[in-house]
Length: 316
Image (cartoon, rainbow, N blue to C red; front, top):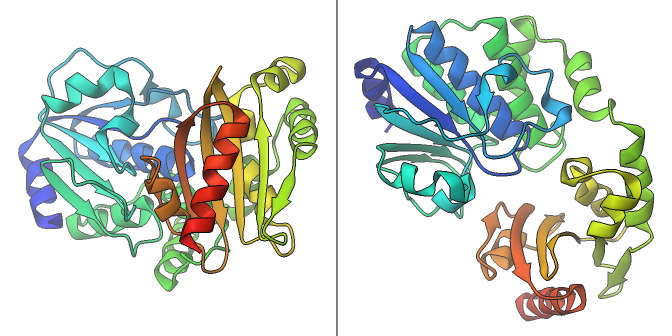
């Protein structure tokens, strides 16, 4: 599959690069790394993300290339990175993508094989790792801009190399990128230690909603639209909240519910141990990884919580 993608790039001249809504470090780092790589080959590129790049990733080289409106241009192919379904790109791009030649590079086991060319490896630590393989096969020389983005993609999607997906390959890639000039302390500081005060005000509100179930194995917390108004924050300030909940001793699955409408919640799950949260999220039309997944559920918060807890009880 990689050879077919390499051939497509060699033949083509214009490419659109995109990823999923609510982009994380792997999504942003991957689209920007590929953007720099294609530019180094004198290709014409556009990078589209439905949602703005979260503030914690606004230091990444090339972030200024990202647009939030679907380009009204023709492309030889569209690269959809770190995204398991076409719907996850966002409704604005749906029709455009369905009429394009799609190349999907992804590592989610719940990927639904929507593209014309799918390079999906659930065993990979990140989409950044898959791009690293692609670049290696193409013999590309890394610029510092490419290296920073690949490092950030791998580093963040492995939880700072702490999660189960922090493989020997992930460590090796990060080591190589450091050798190319990436400064780990700088990346870690920008990603994890440069939050606005308002984020912590919001976190205080969220932690007051914390509840545990099943003898402390399941922890649930939520954020409401009223909390956002009260603290002057928005959804990007909640990035990482589910990890806080997962850090509680004895918790095997953390559920963070973010209100997105009067009767709608975006669910983010993190797990440690044997619980497969990707399977649980898939029952609600979502997906992800065994230890990190998400979905959207309609209903009041009480109804959403009840649905989730029932699903957990049925899968244990």
